[in-house]
Length: 486
Image (cartoon, rainbow, N blue to C red):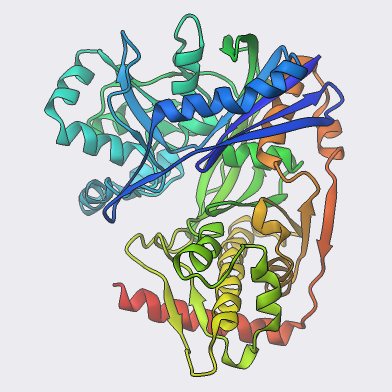
């Protein structure tokens, strides 16, 4: 028996095949485009997303006729479609989109922030689906009318794919994705009537929430009908794929952004340090929670150096160039190209550079950017340690930038913890595959966790005194940037 994983991400859809022993047999991917309109609107074509699923999966299914499938998705990206025809009525509105900012400000000013945080574990931020959905319904009276009459459906990308690829047009999501909408009560594990009223969103729009692991129906992909056994948000899929199934285990997935999750066990952990509390996954026997800290710009900063400024021919060059740079003339770079997320949550912040001199050249700007990314990872992990009141022994990492030697060593140095790079680059796709394997075969979780393998380990190479100096310098720069964007 073969198991197919569909990892529907921002820049591409990835497909992966494993066998019942959890061995990765084949992978494939299909790219996706993103449309940026002005300073706030970031969108994708929902039909292009569907086509990318077919393109990524078709060659694999030809050689590995899977019968089981797991699906993970972008989390906060969503769209509206016609409940009768399935025709998309909005673009896929990205997690990076900022059109809900005004609604967040309005609700925060009315004193709703603490209530929203208590129920959802999240902050009032346009990162999540509900403010952007509320904006669309407010801006388009016809969408509002049809939503209230039950003619429309709302869904994150998992819901859209399942609706379009299931014979009965199933309208489903799982708790880990529902928890990213600002409409889901993570303690009661259901859609919250008070939150729906707060955002003025009709309940008829919403999908049914089913467990993350378990038979949820069938979808047909590239002519193959598959049993859908697992659903997850992308970042919790990566947590599972990194073998972080026990409390206190943490991972960081690098892509367009960087996303850190810390497994907190079977109780939600309330953050006092600017993090989010979310549902990791819901298994038949228990629901697991996580602390979440997102960094909106990571790989995108390296791409900006390459494509926007022409400083790099390839992203891979950044590591060697940074190592050749002069530390004395390297500036402090805060890579907030899409705002500062956790633990600061300042969506209006932008990339900021301190300490340029005539000795600062291309190599120094590249090094400063990588050092800034490492410090942003440190911001989040230090907040996690404070909230969880524990010292995290290691950080597991995956994604393209995890292959950047300079960046990984700098993270280990700045945090004083071991950084473990996953041997399997596609930890997110592997995670949803392993969740489907767990559901379909009953393999013990401890066996899945024990199968994790690393490709590189980075040990800290600087002392505590230098680490404190670096951190203090960074915190001064952050304070100055936040004051400027006040």
